[in-house]
Image 1 (cartoon, rainbow, N blue to C red):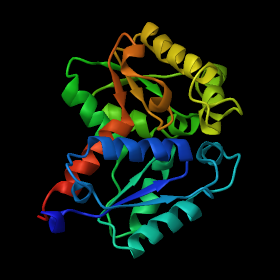
Image 2 (image 1 turned 180 degrees about the vertical axis):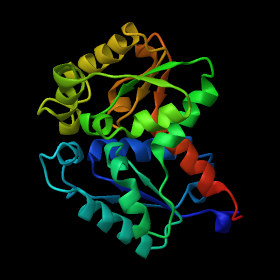
Image 3 (image 1 turned 45 degrees about the vertical axis):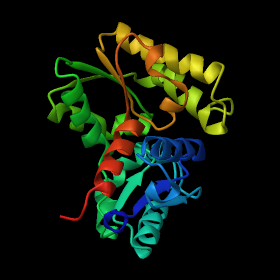
Length: 240
């Protein structure tokens, strides 16, 4: 059985706290009784990737060269599946996939499918995600394909509710996972519910580090849990 399992590649470093959380969840959810039962994983914690949101807004360097470097590095060691522990980077998926023979998991499509399957009565989905992710429309497109409408912040509200608690020097990317960052993001999730969301997506890998399902009065769909579960399923399945 071990020989049939696939080698998983993870592109992290965007940020490192989120990548560490992703790997912890992967280990925690893998059915295992001994060391040899866990998946074989190569994690490239690429701290050289420029800010994805800044690039998508035309205010920063292009992250694609570094993301492509990660893809090629993982391809060179023979990974069978790649996951990117950064949702905003999925805006560049069509540029990245040709650089590797291994399929790259489409986290947006997987999450939208999971929302529809788990919560068939849901109609309006709140999305907590970076300005870059929201501007790129990748979540909007994936959710629309499942007949789901998006509730999200814009402009100054998006900056206050999401970007500051994630990106500020007191935020999650700086390693602060309690106090003001958590309070601000939990309040943001509740505000999306107040605006009509019957479901909330933790649409950035930093969000589930601080926001938990019990914090909200509606279900919280964690993209990290979705892609961790799907990666385990795909890498544990025999070939064919």
